[in-house]
Length: 221
Image 1 (spheres, helix red, strand yellow):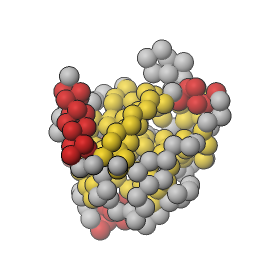
Image 2 (spheres, one colour; image 1 turned 90 degrees about the vertical axis):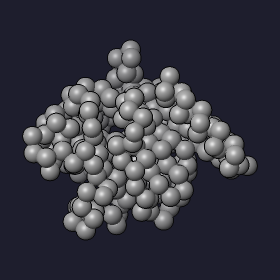
Image 3 (cartoon, rainbow, N blue to C red; image 1 turned 90 degrees about the horizontal axis):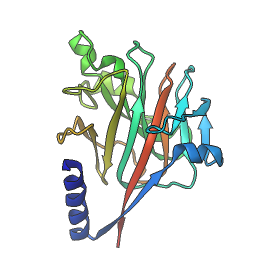
């Protein structure tokens, strides 16, 4: 109910500012079957779970992305169900957006192994925004520590499925987890690109599971 209210308010704001919304649910399982995906540095396999019918990406060195073909995105929101694991340095997963190619993109991703870490420093590394190639997580942590990565209050099960909503405006990215009405991360965008491809993102040595993708685009009149 609260989620529907938030989306309705976004719709009203969009009308007032001269924007219209288009919403699209993307069946990742079906996209895989009809070759509607472009996979970089990973092997994607279909998930046949009835509730989470999507994709699983294997673990491999380096970062990996599954780009959705013919899905250009500028402003709006991206929703996804993801499942990682509580294994140190083995679970980085989220969404890439405004992608220009395999090395130029922005992304929001989660580190489930840090959700309930006993080390308080690790806990503030639970959700991260990056803008490659210039603003990597290493550069942001070194130069602007704790600004572009945060802890997640009342974090979900690090070994279970959880829902994320990523809202992208012309200047900011805001991240919500599960039904929490308060954002877990809200930062200024760092890339000069205002649109581009959308993809499923996994980090170094990480795999992950993805399902129930939904893209809501804002378009100006």
